[in-house]
Image 1 (spheres, rainbow, N blue to C red):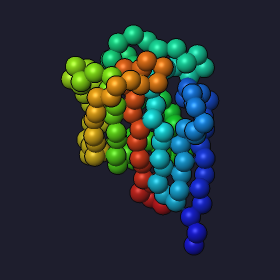
Image 2 (spheres, rainbow, N blue to C red):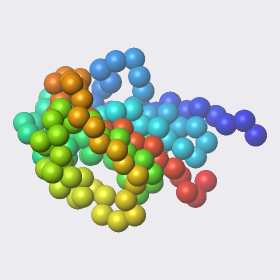
Image 3 (cartoon, rainbow, N blue to C red):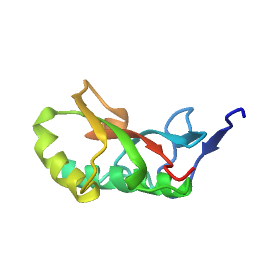
Image 4 (cartoon, rainbow, N blue to C red):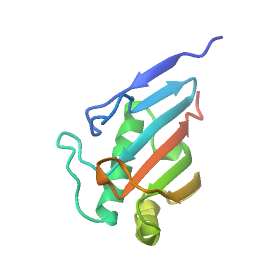
Length: 130
């Protein structure tokens, strides 16, 4: 049976700042585009890595909910930081959202992020019931 590609966008996450979808589902796997810590509707950022990491993870959670999944379905996270000096504080917030059965993860410092964000995270999630 051929796999179907479904594009997912939700008003519960910030509008994309480029030509991409919030997420794409193929079969039982969802690929969520990199999200930053701006607020849906306003695309405004709170100051600081703690607030931006928290909002980034809320945005990811909202996108996953639009697909019928949750953060529990995440199998892989990639984290991009404007500064590795923020790694420890980012991890504290990350641990509020992922508390057990942690997904695989990589974290990198990058030269610059969209909209001068301090953090960007993309995830891959799998529907284990499908």
